[in-house]
Image 1 (spheres, rainbow, N blue to C red):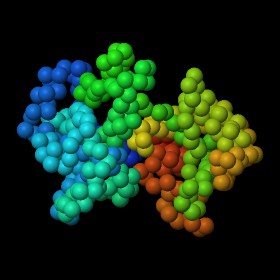
Image 2: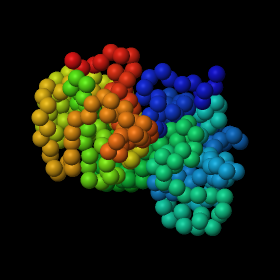
Image 3: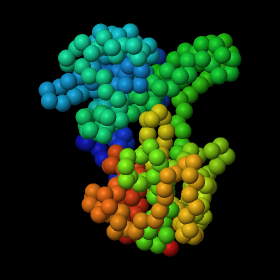
Image 4: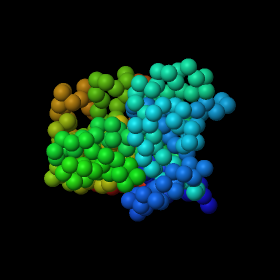
Length: 324
């Protein structure tokens, strides 16, 4: 079985950007000779981003995100190059070009510069390519915005295959960051709580979410966010699944929370509306058949899978409900 064929059993493997079967070779990143060997391989490929937008090759009726590494210089001057890993033995790198490189590429009929969200929502690439593009976008975003040492302000340099930046002035080491976000459904018996923000498309409701703060557990973040945004006190919290979310570099941590009350008090600075939905109503929303045309996020989003897990009775669809 190849790396690409392996499908993990957990629910997290079904969400967008999660199918990323590469071997990352993290133990070899500080071995410059080994990184050079991967880079010099005639099979080496690259995903290329101009600013934060991937460049795709038109491949018949579809697209591919992979370019031969040795040909990337023809697209523009690489600003940073990071080693992502290998897929079935083929080395894969992420190459970052300046955002200005996108304009001259418009002249090439076989190339397209498309934002990652559009690529994912329209299914322009297979899941494993979308997963590696998500990794590349998050990593290159960090390089693009962390070019100077936060300790002394001197320019830093890329090392460890692109997974660290070192300051030659004060010797500080800087590592890519991932921002944890709690996303959750408050559950009360046969009902779950969803809300909507003004920026959502019309009639769409979703799970509540918020960044986890320093010194805060996942469970406490779930309790705090639901109470702040909707006024509901939460007891037991159950983890369901997670999702790497490269907009720009978050980890969405999906949970169910046991609601200890029913009365909603909406924080209007955060939410336009919030309400309880019963299990049958959520099932209609997932199928696009709600009589009032209410909708929920698409399968790309972890919120969709939290709602599906709720409809199916538990985090793994086992019928064991995590709340009272």
